Image (cartoon, rainbow, N blue to C red; front, side, top):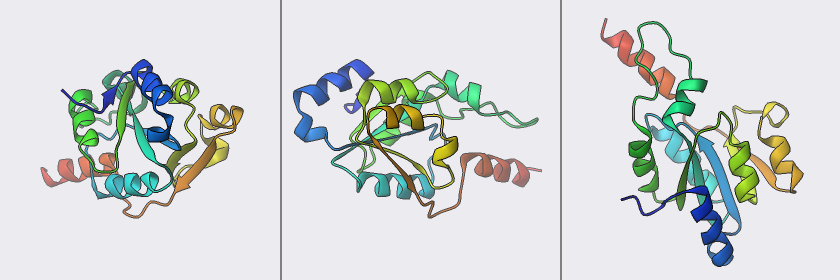
Length: 164
């Protein structure tokens, strides 16, 4: 049992019952397949922007839909969604995790209305699919600079290259 794993409805209820515990609410989202130092520093920086940090975690089906599978590489995600959720929930800056199945976090944003929506500095607001949903209710979008340039895809490539 993961105590800080929520359904959207349960998290909406928790926020409504105790907004002072949650607001300002910071939301970020992603696959978080193989957790690395870049993820940890990113989440630490995101947490500093508000009182609580919630992660929208792409479901296994969602990851398969958005992550290409190059020839010879294992199918993504490598780590199943409940295990990814458990690891994220155990991190000090994380107050909640919600698994979502859509290709973008737009529906999650519309449901939770975070005060601040955070993505990595490798994104641009103009091309961020969730930007209009955040802007529609007056939320803020914050791009956090990437301190450790790493990615799960790069780690997988490195592992596959080392094996040849």
